[in-house]
Length: 393
Image (cartoon, rainbow, N blue to C red):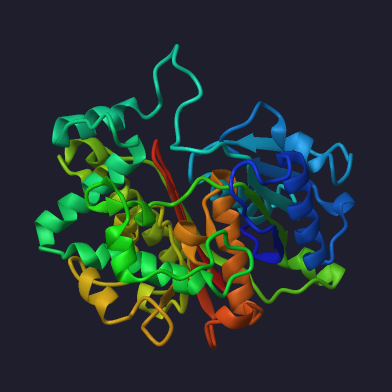
């Protein structure tokens, strides 16, 4: 029998630029300690830990949680590219829901290096080689541009070709992200930018300028997940429930549709969202606040439609009408998103979760979405994995 699952504590540390952070062991322990304190749970009561990171050695998860305590619990290390943190959340929720444990920790961290993402090995096949080959077949290869920018920039080009979207629509996403991040003490980039500044920034891969690409950053975030029965027994808050959660990987359409949009996971997001909405018994138009995967501005545009926040082809109107921000239909990325808060890969999904939990509790300070009762977390990793989580107050 499935159990009701609650997020009783969240924690994160302010994200920083590479080279300015503490070691991952310290960051991970700090985020875990913050989540435990928020929950009112001692570490000795945690029965399993799911720890995500992308750039790190085996058992780095143990090294991080050992800084909190040596209790002998199982620790599982995860790597699902940019969906790593939310994959840890998914497994922690699943363990509690099925009754394997009653109290689990999900932790994500990343100690990144400056510059574009790159693989760790050159003596074996890359796990994203098929995606790169598909991209090259559709649009060629640019030796001067990072691979990720070519993937998501190419999806942006495809969207422009399909819908006649103006390039400054993408740039407006960055402007909105910085406006939101200005209210977030955890964000890396808190200075606002103008539309002209975004458009005038150096081009990375058309239509992307530098200010439309998320930066490599370092950080950590965590969540404590328990069953409803456990929360009642220990006097813990049951105010935030995981109402629905879906996870998907690539289907044939990612490679066979002949589309850069499909190649960056549009259909994965659709599939995971359907699962999450069905479990939660809601429709997309009931959401109040969303933290979605804006690694590049085109992916925010695509995610609006894949998540059902607006109709297919309706993202430009959604943006220009201000339906993606305060006073609009649904506030997206009140944290500033990956573009401004930063994107330490393993931490991202759990940082999104922390933001949604704070919003639903009414604890988000200057960036609070008034009356928020339903929130959504969405992260996607090329390779591929996508997680969509619906949280409810």
